Length: 332
Image 1 (cartoon, rainbow, N blue to C red):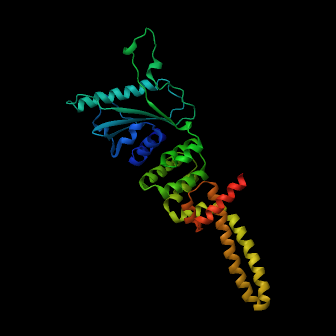
Image 2 (cartoon, one colour):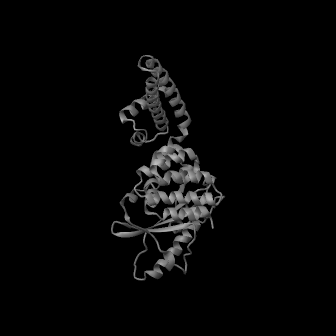
Image 3 (tube, helix red, strand yellow):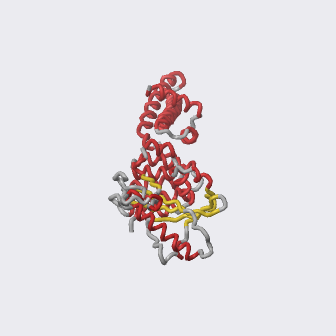
């Protein structure tokens, strides 16, 4: 069994993830008229005569105005591109239609099926999406010529910047597959944890990583890092700035030393012990403030949301806006 195929199938069996796939990556006007509250993965246990269920495909039934339509998703993770993919997809759909008639004998018309091929491979997708390009054009048959087309979603066609602009579960999934960067994924998972209401969908995304780590597709330490982020929101915030801990500690030590020196100077008049204690307090406060400012700068540079940065660092958004403006002026 292909871990990618079965893992993706579980992911896109979640309504939230399915909806994000269509609304974000299927640029068709009618998508916005779908009633996603009614969508459900098709129970294919009754299909046996023609259609054969695989680990790499999924059929959704969903309401469109006053009728039902079906969304067919074929997950393709082969190392090489199948040039006859259009024929494969057409075969799956015609077999589905045959079984639909067996189980719905009183219908006069077949329901609409929208076919999607979700491709994860590293090689560029070169196969025709139109069946007609696979068939000889002579003799010319005009309207009698067969034609069919599927909708292609090739993950490697989306740039890192484009995916970071979208910032939902599916775009983060594509980001992990096509532009793997653990540090970046930690930030994006934190964003998902904060803004995504469907925590089960986020959990499924994390479970997909667990399966990859279990089967040796990614480093187990990478999964453990992401799992740690997901399980405790407060620890998430601590972990996000942990990479800056050494720098913050240095700033703190510098502030402590300066405060201690200042306090010792004042202590000549107020008493050595009292001055040292005062210096420690002031130095610690100054060091912690500088640490929060440096952490905020790093988060702003990564493009994190202002509200989330304010929650983590406890700095007011007005101050964050000033820091952001200062960073922009430095870049210019």
